[in-house]
Structures are given as structure tokens and as C-alpha cells.
Length: 163
Image (cartoon, helix red, strand yellow):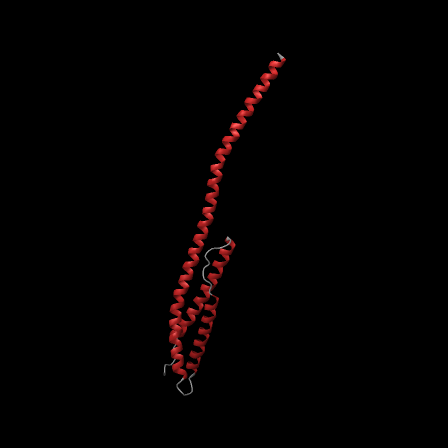
């Protein structure tokens, strides 16, 4: 009878071990697809965020480029007016001198701004890099807006047009 109990005990232990193996194998087989899906979702969300950041950055860059073209045309017109004033061979009025100085200032500011504009990179190494780029781009856009306002003030200015 003692040996029978040992055999029963051994037999019961084998069944218990087999059930535990089945449970752990099923858990692993269920966990594998879940882990795989989780990894895909995480990587896709990262890719999606990067794509969204790139689209935002590219849209801002395109807006700046369009504003740059408009501002270049305005500054070219100012420079033509400046040249017309400068070649008259007479003493310039205070308004004309003020106009010439304002045109020079806005031209210098615009040229410096153009040197600092950075194109959108093809990818970002990290989310911190993307965030930094967007903040810098926002600063560039603010500076361009300031230059645009300067040009608008010059345009609206009441400079005596004797040229």
C-alpha cells in the first residue's frame, strides 16, 4: 500500500506538471501575438507622430517660402524706389532719408533671416529633436512676421514721393 501511494503521488505530480506546462504554453502562445501587436502599435504610433511632425514642419516651411517670395517682391520694389530717390542729385528730405534707412533695415533683417532658415529634415532622430525643430521653426516664423510688419509699415508710410 505504501508503494501504491507513492506511485499515485508520482502519477498525480506528473498530471499536475503536465497541466502547468499546458497552461504556460498556452499563455506563451497567447502572449506572443499580444506582444507582437503591442510592438506594432507602439512603432506605428511613433511613426505616425513623426509623420505628423514632418507634415506640420513642411507646411510651416511652405508657408514661410510663400511669404518669402512675396516679401522679396516688396523689398525689390522698395529698392527701386530707394535707387530713384538716391540718384536725384539734390538734398533729401527727412522723410526720404527715413524711408531709405527703413528700407535698408528691412533688407538687412530679411537677408539675415534667409540665412538662418533650415529646410525640413527627412527624418528626426528623436521626439526631442522634432520638438526642438518645431520650436525653432516657430521662432523663424515669428521673425518673418516681424519683418513682414516692418515692410507693411514702410508701404503704408507717408513718404513724400518726389521721385
